[in-house]
Length: 186
Image 1 (tube, one colour):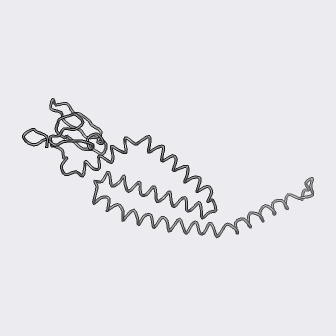
Image 2 (tube, helix red, strand yellow):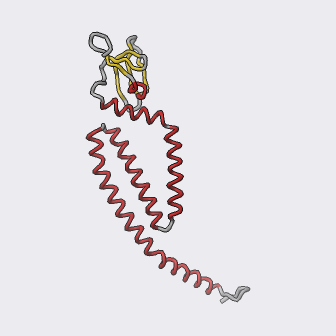
Image 3 (cartoon, rainbow, N blue to C red):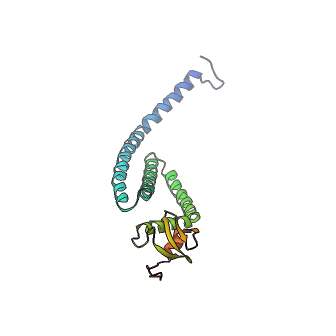
């Protein structure tokens, strides 16, 4: 055994550190087991919820939109589970700060992507609108032409001159007019 300047030997220091580590492990073991059980239950519950939600979205929307909405639901569920897990582990302040910061980031991102979100929402409505289909003659955003395709964010019209005009769905959905077979707007 070697002596240090304060009278402690290296063996005593190692024993003291190991004793503190054991005590901390025994103290946190219930929290860790609770967190592990919570994670397993959350995993099973989230998987079950997603299996219920996906067919509902697929019944109403096409595959692309159903995948998008299912992914959004999954992100929200996993984020909530992660915050609850942090709270169970005794890191409630971190969970609250993370939730608040994520809210501000989401607000900034949604503001930055507001036009894209508006186009996507309008695209969902246009895709479900029974009066707006490829092949229809329409007037939209001062363009007269035939609907070539309706996508999630944009609509393609073949103008009377043969040019393909790409319009944002939010502009099309806001105001469009279907032309009758006689050529007049309906």
